[in-house]
Image (tube, rainbow, N blue to C red; front, top):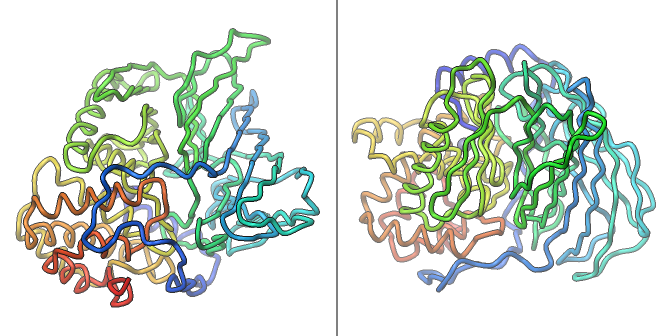
Length: 474
Ligand SMILES: [Zn+2]
């Protein structure tokens, strides 16, 4: 879900290793019982992109960034309508990952309310204190299609800056995944996957109709997920910013002394922001982002959102994608291209990032080739790397082997499949896959179904360990 260049990844690996602490994560839950409906008949292709579920969650997030620029108080309101019976709501506290204590991040839930709410409590999920999951127990079992409303108060502490989804640095604070994240996987149920030491995401979350409100010191500018309006007038040294994103799986917010530039490309409003004293040009960043959108839309279909904001953070050697927003912490254009590609693969075509990280990372790595295919020898070398592309986050012993197998080998696998199947047919099949699984949580079986008429491509994916025989059976 994030991309680092190899050198940066290795440097980060050393940092993570230095944190020490936890034992190996538990084995991955089996995805074999996934009840997600097949999204496309084998060889079939939808006439148009799938629409989001009209019964998806409605999420309202209110954040207030304290004058200390390190404390965020939040209130989250969720209207949740399951498609399977359930008597609880499970939220993932992403900021409490294994390295949270070392860097000073922490998300706590202070109160929970709701007509059906009985209690709430933490579960560890191998995360830092107070836990990686927060489980709200309801007084009744919701039937499929029945709704409940739950409200949570939270406090988020932002630690020191680094290549993380939340932190602080000079002139900027940022908090992505800064609120309890609903982990419902439609057709499957709650995702309670453990956190892992490996540098990658482990969340699975549905698209939600999301409204975000951020109150912050008036001198600072907010750049976040969603279509932002103008801030309110200054009052008591504070301003309030609001945005709306009808299909957000998660939310990123950056608050800083940004200078911004905007442009429209393919009907998408791009907003780029740079920090003072960096010598960076927001207009150039907006332009390069727009070029990435055009190149990727040519290959994968229309850009999934109406807006894209790109706050440029200090150079921590990578980028982290969020729905319609990117935390850019690199000076490399290829990192930006990779994160923009995630708008299709992760943002629109969702996946369980714990169970099937290749469905977003191998695809985003492959998408880097829209500027030109890498040398054949390099692709062959990466395809020969060890490890199964389709491994879960629990199956990679360290960052290096995860990045090699999922990003390097995974990207090379898709390039090779395209070459063997023929570029036109392969591109058409991937568009079918993206349109069929839009706004859902895709599975490897969905990829197999989209490639059903391209046996040469399927063989490459099987050989690289991305697809199992059972993925092909559906
Ligand atoms: Zn990525």
